[in-house]
Image (cartoon, rainbow over all chains, first blue to last red; front, side, top):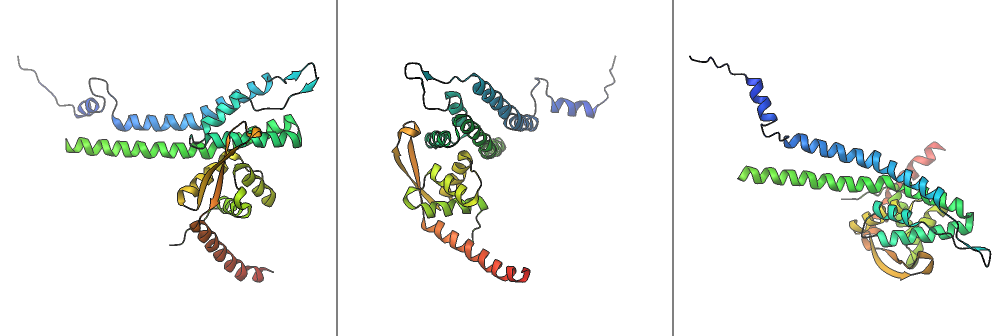
Length: 157
Length: 106
């Protein structure tokens, strides 16, 4: 008995869009990567940094020399240095951390340790947006360049 | 073609120019703070300095490490000829414009 086949165009389009192997088309994948990166850069990273700052601020202990009853020099915590290093250009990381330390030492002499700590974190938070945006733009440029290059290569093949 | 400077870029170049041989991160930030009354974050300052260096307005040299910097070196910045030219052009454009506009307002 002969079967009557009816061509369903929408089904074909659907099949092409999400192929049988279950692969997602490149446009959707790129869109997901861009949205994911934007979310990570604008929400998750600053949120994590803020939580870590709060934890470090409240858990830090003043190092007191019991024999001389003298409070040692206030220093920036290693976690803070790690965050600062993470947010800035790797080429300038060494100098930036040095500058943060020098400024912190000057501020703590001028205003006291707690005020200096507040100023330090205000500095770090202030410097988040330009650093992140610069990295994000660089990443997007490479993403666009990569996808164009891939398209050209696939076209030639 | 004339190149324009952003406000913060202009302030940074002016600070480097006025500090002479002692222009590095902290001293530049302090100079801008002293002149403008606004606190500058080190991270954004270095982003601007990097951009100005890339444009060829500034050049940098690695300096000495000090104890209060935790043994980390300083990076000194110097104004290049192109930076000086752009700064002058910017000043000329703004000053001519202000000269024309300010008497009208007053």
